[in-house]
Length: 319
Image (tube, rainbow, N blue to C red; front, side, top):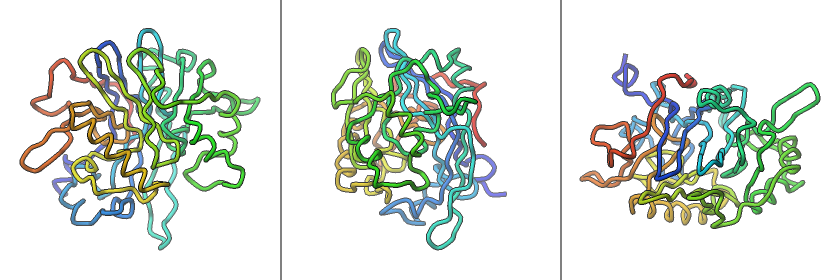
């Protein structure tokens, strides 16, 4: 068995918490995506990923965590994105017929319950964007038909995001929001605007490119600052190798500009919150002789002891 297989393989992130000033953040796992890494990226090579196997599982697939970020600020509870939902499936083969990996979900509500919360406790749901792995728990099937999973919550997304996906000429492909999800969302949605304050210390930063109305979120409380990256940055390797660009970005030029904007924030000391990151979703960018890299808060020498996350030994993770 390889060294990777016996202990160095990446895993989906488990539940963890972080306090930024007076704002509490909690990663609520739903599952994971595992994909061949090279086809995902412009600029990705076999050599690059062979030298950075810390983001790969024992089979050489890129590990991306799935879940929601719970933000609690001054009595307001916000969920950022809604995971994949209660299903698991193989990802369809690529154009040459090769297997593409697997996506697994279904743990969000049980992990939310471990925090003592149910769907009715959420005040606001906000979407970074509407890809299928971010809207999976938008609806729950009931005998009377699908209903909003978080019935009391306002649901907010950028207007450009809504226009893009609700265009009746767009149709449907795997990985997109379904027509049923869009129809239900349309009954409850309101608009996220750039710079809007969602709760004390929590604001919106529109970062288009991956999708037309992609949004990131800024947490600023006391001396600390954190950036909820959404899909602007999927993988920690993109921090040390900013030339990597997802081939699935709708607007690659805008995507590069948004990544550069967030990279500057991270270089200036903001905490990275990457809900697709493997192993640990909270970290800080550091520079050393090898260049820029993400220093996660589980490592030795955590930056700023007051910012340590609390990892739950009881959370469920998809394996």
